Picture 1 (cartoon, protein in one colour):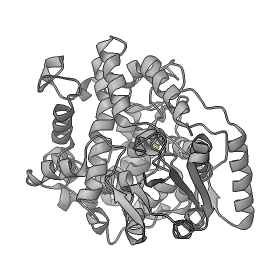
Picture 2 (cartoon, protein in one colour):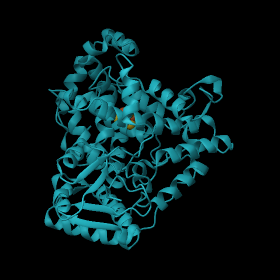
Picture 3 (tube, helix red, strand yellow):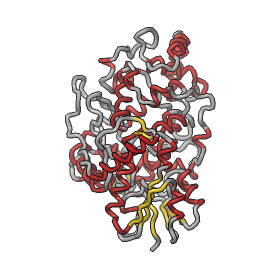
Picture 4 (cartoon, helix red, strand yellow):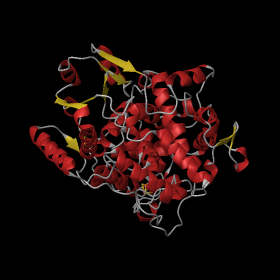
Length: 491
Ligand code: SF4
């Protein structure tokens, strides 16, 4: 049996053909030299890889080298590797002698199935269509070819857009279990301190490891989520509470992206929770849609469109300012943006709504370079992956590929943030205002975005109301002048 080279995002048993298969694990320091990663992200990657090496013990060769190429040169025998998750890593694997690349693992659907489905469609590829196809194909939450109960609906989003009661600071559900650090974490922390002293740059704050580094830790978090948190996930999945960053989110994305968990095992456990009456269908369906819908859809699109998303980058986009890239939350007075940047600085994680509706929303309103933003999210988030961000962020939230996969840009004004969070009550700005000293930067930014992109938005039915409202507004150029005056300073 050939030795299986596993990358740091292929750490689960499903990346091996046999539990006793010989393994190669490589730590490349050059990865950390190239770009400044969040300190907690660097810690989790190294900790997870070293924990896997310790579990495999004599079964694995564990090399610490400057580059992957250097490590592979030290081997006498050929190796095989599952298809890597980035184009850069795939190209590296293809260029190495003695390395066989196998089909990808760690997702529910295969690229060939996806291409077959996508090739049969003309025009925009819709997640709703793909999700329905994948559920039918894998028999998830179905009875025959139809969805289980709830009026034969495939998704139950309409029930999942609630915000907590006005006076609730927390959802009052148990937080996710936090792993116990061990001697491997202590060794990683010392090593990263040494690297920092040598000049390798990190961003964000160091802190206790909050996310699973082993499969055992990930399973504990998954089971706890299914039993105690999933029931509340659906209704509040789009809401934000300043004192409750985790709310009912699973906080398992890094575990799926490190390959510690197989998404299908989580889907089946969630489905069973519905059948056992542990969690309502709306929550279970919402969670499964994130995995079988979004995660698989985005993964497949990354390869299907190949380099297309980057090519659609805005040629005249503006640079991402330093206060944002350096996570300088204290420089920001806008309550929502400051709190969320602080969350990224302190935990390398905020859930998907702050990512999309605050961070990415602010960026799309100002026309920042999508590819710079992809790079920033990739480095700063505990679960950052190029495949997810290139498609999800550049394609969806930044509307850099209008029509390919989304019907509407993810841009919203301050009133939306007010509706879905408790931030505005304690903010110095007023979400109703787009102009003046108290103007909310998101409300002003929204109208500037609609104004700037109106040619692209004109034929979009879902944006028609905003485009028509824009025609009646006389204050948008004053908002743009106000924004110009602020320049690249934090709001
Ligand atoms: Fe954010 Fe505007 Fe609300 Fe302030 S008023 S918290 S800036 S949305």
